[in-house]
Length: 198
Image (tube, rainbow, N blue to C red):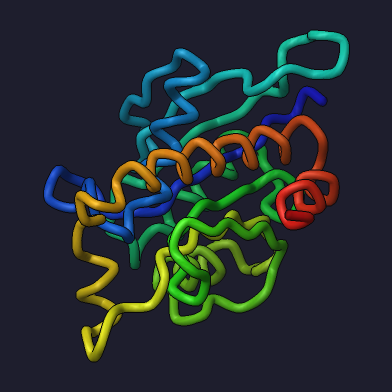
């Protein structure tokens, strides 16, 4: 259990994007950093990174080592920093990489865990898969729903979560952090079963 998990939240850097739907990955990383009492700082891999232990193992031992990270590049070039992080920390992407991202094809505030699959038009995932040479990493998909009317999906995900949804979003972020914790402490299959059984 000494090998760390690399937990990556996708999004765009800077205050301009901080509340966008596209940045829910960053938001979940912030919740996890808060839970572990850690602070992200700039890393040479072009990412913001914190090393911590997440959760509690059966018997009360501290949870596994995790690397919490958000690429410091824009979403569509996330792959380079994530590949560099995986190499720096010796993380095998198909075994101990978990990527958190927004998902248009899931209703707002719903969560899904999956391993592998396509990118569904998500530029961040496409960049990761190309840089890593695999799609076989774990994803935590945070539903943001479809845009209303004829709004362009890109404009929709790059708009802020409206004030009326912020309370629900706060709950969703905590649930997402719970799911990440369960992946690293219980394993992917058990965490996926617990998340999806409801």
